[in-house]
Image (cartoon, rainbow, N blue to C red; front, side):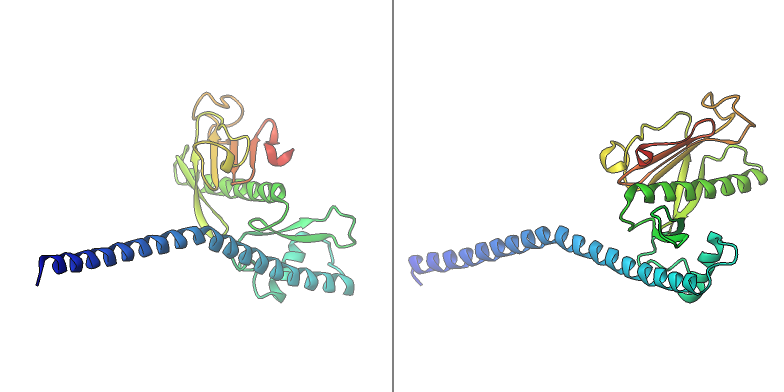
Length: 237
């Protein structure tokens, strides 16, 4: 075989490899570009599925209210009824978002509404509901830890949106004034707390070991609580 022919064969083989590599690179870039779109559609699908499930629960609640309402008009009764007709409460949201019974303020004759703390359209309300829920869980977890001899637990666990999460003890206020998506050094859902007697923060403001400060944030908003000042944060503005 002449040297010219050998050179042509090597050239063709090299060109084929180059084309294959370029095609692979184009394929990888295309897939990478499609991932955010796929995730957006996936999240939208979860939101729609949650809205559909909660709408069914609201119709059931409205039907019962029209028949005779609840004997004492309490949230627990409304929640119990929905749990019964929907075969459970914790899995009302197909994406395991934490769901709440809330008092209506829109002038509706119905006393109660059902809101998902993960997919609800009013994100400030979602943050407030989730923060209040987490604070109550931390109170219970703190009581359990202290009953077992741990006066100042460095962390406490809570459950939200189908996941067990951790809140951490701090000695000073966090810098959370907005959601974690627009705050440096934080990501996703976070929670922190302070205890009387653990540091100078809140010293002398109650019994040693009592909850003095709580800070919660999700991607959209934050909610901060102090025993002497109540709730603040952008979810309350």
